[in-house]
Length: 83
Image (cartoon, rainbow, N blue to C red; front, side, top):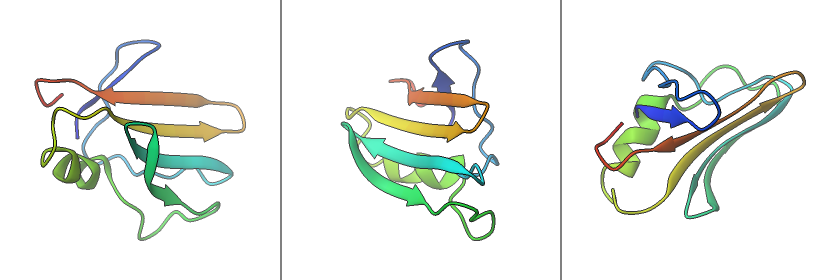
């Protein structure tokens, strides 16, 4: 899923994992968690591509990825054009 970061307008690569180690990683739809990675889970976690496949089924909804780590916080939102 190519998602746009709210703070710096950077696309997330489709190969990026939805994981942060220590912290919180999730995919939400309209503010409701659809996927959450366990702390320290770095294997067998979803990628942005996995999130995009799910979001493409309902593109009009508000899909976001949240990556909140100890010293870094990123939030990405899917654009209407599939970015």
